[in-house]
Image (tube, protein in one colour):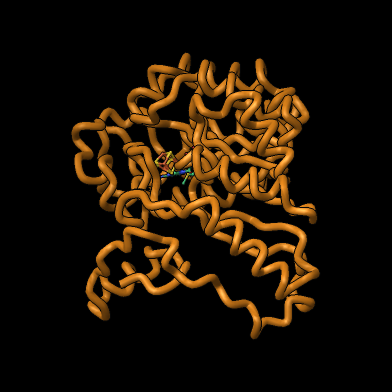
Length: 311
Ligand SMILES: C[S@@+](CC[C@H](N)C(=O)[O-])C[C@H]1O[C@@H](n2cnc3c(N)ncnc32)[C@H](O)[C@@H]1O
Ligand code: SF4
């Protein structure tokens, strides 16, 4: 039984050690109590004015590389009213708090409830700022993004992953590059900062596909404030890719980090090199990088990989 707004995955990990049985998923997250920060001296924390908050667990999508839905037992979300009440309750207890950082995978799993949350915040006399991750979806229209901005949203981080529709389809991402472009433009022009996540080296990704990803950020750089490029493409246990590696043409003998394609053309070093090329372009375009990007880092990663090949 989930008893609080802590991630369900932490309970699952204990289950792997046979400490606890897998808890049945709680259907109504609104039943959970709010996190209690009263025993924390918030003034001792660097970002004393920011508190974490959770609007959902899991995800509405089923990307083949992602374990979000698997670890969190599907998708469940809180009502906008419950979210608003938590925000107010925390501010009343901690008047120094001005902002909330959503810790879940998407704040827009239910656009309807997100809209309710936004409307309540717009009518609330005190300004509250918030940010989080979000999915690319058609409900993120310009007017909806403007409402979120008015309600205090300052940044949304979207998983775009690739600028190639062929690769997005293979990923089962459920979006096209055209939809991604429209949503980030709507978000950015509404005045909300856009962060975009990308991944490199999905099995079957050819140079032309990767070039489409580079083209994507070049074409849209004025609507992307920062990027979050995954340095390592992990094939995590229980995901469709880990369960059916041969279907994806993948050899997992060297583990979830150092996997390679069966033809050997796509390995850790190939993916690392794409990360580097992507970061070089983002830097040239003036997009902030939310990743370490230095020769020392690439060299250390390479050394570790090569050492793993000849233990
Ligand atoms: C958990 S998702 C949440 C973002 C949002 N729900 C979306 O995808 O639109 C955060 C990001 O983690 C990255 N990610 C997910 N699975 C990964 C994996 N197996 N290896 C590396 N990065 C991964 C992806 O770039 C993804 O956008
Ligand atoms: S990558 Fe994002 S959209 Fe895809 S399943 Fe994971 S959390 Fe959901």
